[in-house]
Image (tube, rainbow, N blue to C red; front, side, top):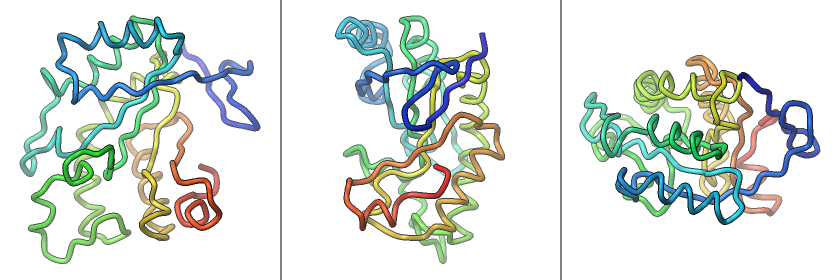
Length: 204
């Protein structure tokens, strides 16, 4: 059943106030055989939502070599969370951090002439779009607006500690929208005026 999720002065699920009680389970750090067990344990703790990053280099280790099966089956992880009774928060931004190798960037990006990571650089954004063209169609039907468990999607992670390129942030939001993401977007930053000023985007 399709639902609505809104961020106003608080969270609203189907027009009713909703309190998110979330924990993180990074599927790429847990073998698939244990996904259900870990998600059930999270549910048993009293959580109603699970959050995870989607590291780019986990799904495109070689240029143009996309992997979304087995341990890389993000659809299966999200569907399992739904079966367990958990909503999902997705952080599918190109740079994940998450204490993951190279912040989730594929190493081969560094071989591209003229590329500047985490900026509005055209070379970089072209590779981001190629990745999103493969990834986002998997996530679209899993959004709460399509009857799935995904509540919202992050566009960048702690960007205020790195840069202040609003054109870049808008480009990420617009790319996600272009490929069918219609749940609310969010960013994550330290709670101080400088980083919030640099890392946030109006309407996100």
